[in-house]
Length: 311
Length: 270
Ligand SMILES: Cc1cc2nc3c(=O)[nH]c(=O)nc-3n(C[C@H](O)[C@H](O)[C@H](O)COP(=O)(O)OP(=O)(O)OC[C@H]3O[C@@H](n4cnc5c(N)ncnc54)[C@H](O)[C@@H]3O)c2cc1C
Ligand SMILES: Cc1cc2nc3c(=O)[nH]c(=O)nc-3n(C[C@H](O)[C@H](O)[C@H](O)COP(=O)(O)O)c2cc1C
Ligand code: FES
Picture 1 (cartoon, helix red, strand yellow):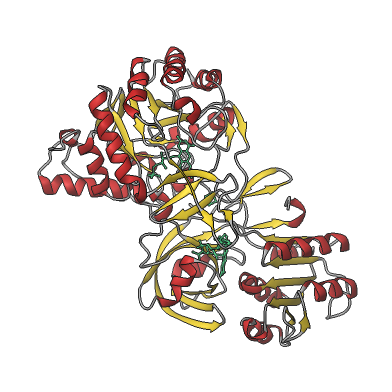
Picture 2 (cartoon, chains in turn purple, red):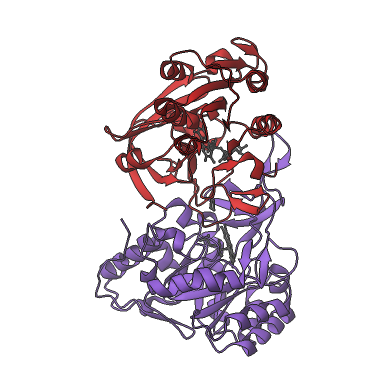
């Protein structure tokens, strides 16, 4: 049985920096592949968008195993952006998303500034992409990723280069592993980002005391899941006060109420990540929970909730 | 690929069968009907809300008519040590996940007539349905089981009933059967051939700790026999989406959840 959102009179459509989403729920990149694996469980076209796994120009092997460890109310991962390259995505994954009628956000990664641009250029004009999410925040690669996203000057430079390569909506994904996220957020906005997404995973580690060894082959990895939600909410709230562009909030969302909290903190849309692993219908369950909330609270249009936190 | 389901499964019983070994019986009609030997379920353990990840378990036995499946599990960490305390309730099972052992299909094609099945520890569980199919098809099948000690040989009785004779057994501490690892009787069998007629084996399946599978894979390769292994990696999504569970193979990294868990031993880079 494939889960679908239920009927409602609540207006759910949001505009994420020029990306029209039929409702505010997408998936967190890397937790949902390109949607097909979850099609037995949820109607992926009914989501606000599907965000695909980070893609680079040529394939990446990713990191050694073990790549994950469970932690209290969360998990660490060090997948390392394993992907078969943008040509594969273009030929085998994105056309399927088009066939089923899904709105598509492609998460773009690179080892170098130029590689981000190369990935975008190879997707431009294909009609297979509705928006890009520029991942300058992956903690699991040695070059590119988070090393770019922690320095405002690099952020301005790479976002500026990507901006010049596309007119499609461009979301820039921020890392929480910085002292002041608003500085990075402003740099991305100034360089032309249409929206910002946050948070990527928090750097962490887990140790097996018995064997005196790290639980991940890479030693450190990115923490996600309900354990990070309070940190993510705080960062969304701080960022929403620092920039004008809309935010895509994520980090530990597992229920409709979690998602509503992100919208109140200032997010225009939300992404469900780790919760998909616990519950393969989490995306639709979150959306239905948001509808419940709106109906119970007399919210006619979900946009009313964005930044509606009363401090 | 057949449709995956996330089935709400009532826990019918949950009993200790040996040292740190338990059998959980669940009502899961769709999975009981569709599951093939080698495939597994990805279980959301009830009452463990602070655990964000499911746990993969093989199906030890099923009764398709009654709609039930059985899991043999060993306490090794946080959730498997929590599971024995679960009384009534509902688990959620994603399944049937993954590919199946090739033995029955090879037999049907005439490519396998003498099988050697090797289970180490709880690795004996995912092989039971395979042996059922091979035996009922008429394939000459020998089973070698290894365990730490006599009390841990909890699958032995079922195998004996199925085969009509005792499986070949080794215990690490020598309390039953061969003393030492089950690789010793495996070597003997590969040398002497099937207990049915002395013919050489043409199919080996092994499941258990990785070091055991690696050794048996080497023994089978030396004897020139096709060998399959079931790779157990930590899994997050369990359905092919997250790349947590990759195995290094001669053709690159493959997902053990959906490209496996069964792999040709010759394909695995150990
Ligand atoms: C396809 C498949 C089928 C399986 N079938 C069975 C079965 O029939 N019976 C059974 O008892 N076990 C089976 N396992 C192993 C079982 O999934 C793990 O024992 C379980 O996930 C451990 O959970 P935990 O919370 O107790 O351990 P944790 O606290 O998560 O970890 C404790 C220890 O177990 C190891 N571990 C964690 N996950 C796995 C894993 N997936 N595979 C191997 N070791 C792991 C960790 O590295 C660690 O050393 C299977 C695994 C796979 C991948
Ligand atoms: C297994 C896994 C893989 C991920 N891969 C990516 C990726 O390829 N690109 C990216 O931008 N973020 C990636 N992330 C981060 C998530 O998109 C998300 O930012 C983070 O997990 C927080 O959300 P959550 O708590 O809901 O999972 C990954 C996360 C996980 C758990
Ligand atoms: S566990 Fe997610 S791909 Fe195998």
